Length: 258
View (cartoon, rainbow, N blue to C red):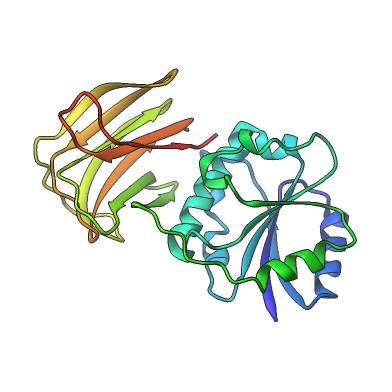
């Protein structure tokens, strides 16, 4: 039996119960929760452990376009999607179940939610479509970097960046909106207890299109087992990062979060 995790952005219990009953007729085991918009309380992190459980085969997000695109909701979903796929892989299925209302424009979604499946709900054939997707093998998706998150009310929110299959001579990270509070370098997979930074820099000003970024950097070498950790305060609209470079132009990655 396949298992899915259902996140409902709305609070309509009847709709959720009907949907769960429909899924069960197709042999789908369903777990889930109702979304809470509480960025200060890091409520978006609450279902992470349930979703990354290896018994779960997909994460379903139920909501209208208006609910999905609300800035706080989109930001929380984006961070949760990053945290989930950091553990389950970029190919892990995330499916939006769009309820009636405004038609969702995929271009308005954040980077972590780009190129995911959007299905209409309610739909008599929805259960069959999800089962079909879960039985379709997905090839692993490669990336030049690994991005993860650590967050709770005590430590705040930390982004982890590590190169994949390469080494960087240093690293730069910037935010559009929000502020960087601290940075560190250490072994991949856990916040370091201590850190030594080589030529750290703060207050860098970067321009990417119409957006301005406040950035920090360090010249510590990163490899696939060595990560850069950045504590960010506030809710940035997007982040930018990449290998440290003294050139006027450099390759960077931009991740839109809301």
